Amino acid sequence: LKARDGSVERVSTGLDRLDALLDGGFQRGALIILAGEPGVGKTVFCANFIHSGWVQGEKGVYASFGEDRRTFLSNMRSHLGEEKVKCFTEGGCEYLDLATVTPEGVSETFQAIFEAVNRVGAKRLVIDPFTALSLALKDPLDVRLFMHSVLGKIVRQLGCTTVLVKEAYVEPRALGVEEYVSDVIIHLIASMYVADAVIHLSTDVVEDRFLRVMELTKARGSRLSERLLPYTLERGFRIVNPFVLSEGKVVKRWQPIPDSTNRFSTGISDLDKMLGGGFPRGSTALLEVDSKLTAEQYFPPVMSTAANFLAQGRPVILTLPLGIIPATVEKYVKLCGFTDEEINRLMRICVIEGQYPEEVTSRKYVWSAKPKDLLESQALYNQMEAELRARAKERNVLNIIGLDNVYGVFGLQNLPLYINRGMSSAAARGDLRLFILKPGIPSKAVYQTLYSTTELHLRLIRKHGVLFVYGVKPRTILHAIEADEKSFVPTLIPIV
Ligand SMILES: Nc1ncnc2c1ncn2[C@@H]1O[C@H](COP(=O)(O)OP(=O)(O)O)[C@@H](O)[C@H]1O
Ligand SMILES: [Mg+2]
Image 1 (cartoon, rainbow, N blue to C red):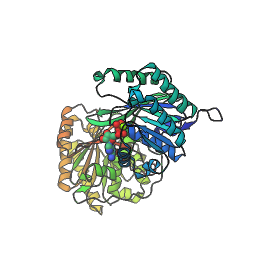
Image 2: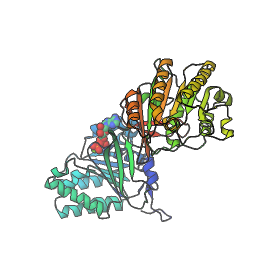
Image 3: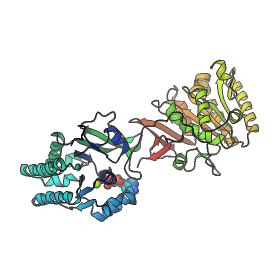
Image 4: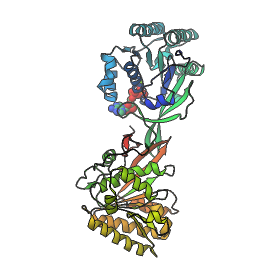
């Protein structure tokens, strides 16, 4: 169907990111095949699809060969919430419980679907699983009947956007003849230029963690910029977004998240939740960062912890990872509402003399030294730290250290001692030390030492353009990291 201006009309899929990729949604009157193994969320996707149409004044019919109506409603209530189920219970969308279909009943089943679509005045139709119906299509006549009734009348004539659910089989080799025929039929529909879009839902394992991925195999009329979209079934069906930090938004004064008696808050409430309250007091945490991540992607979470310390009048000392400059940190803390006075009193960025031009090193918060060796450097550092601590209202210090920087300045042979002393200092004073570790230090032993001695170990990775964090210690599931439009504090979405 075409809109007046000749362009194809689009209807929302119910998922923002999918709509954006598909130039607004599915084409009105399109036939979509949604495939995936049991449990991937096909039914949740389809219920959400019907609901999103209903919101825009398009009624829908859900023709089901799966769960009975009560089970469907109660499952969808727990996935999508009461609000989204209302379109079925009081909004005029119809859940058509077809239970089973026998080869003898194929044409009656088609008729029942067709009548429901007409009765409701549906603009959207789901057949879930369509496999149940296609299993009953035994001979070419049935296939022609299907083409005629579902495709011809419902989809093309009535302009009803239709999703056919294909329940994939776990064991392809276990296919019986019937399943095989059914598979061939669906494949024919998908490939004979009949299906306008084909979507595959599947599960994946990334670094020993569970992930869900939607694959846009076919999308007629759309030039796709991305075909693999990670998603989660956390509170409905949700495609997670790539991390894009909105530029230069003025943020109101940072409101600190209070600490518990034995933990420091990370400054990100979702991360606190993931870690069972935050970073243990007196601990050293390891943040391991994938080489694919840019500074803009991994630094905001780190700076959230820094802001949470500063806002409580605690000192923050940074030895920046390579690729991040002092000006970036200054910009960030100013956007969090900290004054020059606070920054100069509580924050220090450690640099080596000569590393930056005068205009950078002349800043009060930049601490530059030219130590002759590691021991001298640590003596100077400790002195500076003690002075900051003495001036601060709260005595716990946060040390953020890019280990690639330390490696670059002091070399491999000094790293173990550096790490060891840092950890002891944090433990003795009840501070928090955050080591940022990236690939590139040419020593397995260094990584091994860090893995085995740090109390908390997080990994930040990128997959299909999306940022994820997970805990190695404590072990957690994958969480997608999304940027909040209004603040720097990222949102974490568990992948379930
Ligand atoms: N409240 C919930 N939150 C998140 N996931 C859930 C919840 N309840 C069930 N699940 C998961 O949702 C999946 C079922 O989704 P469903 O749409 O019925 O899958 P499909 O139709 O593809 O078989 C299962 O993998 C189940 O583990
Ligand atoms: Mg299902």
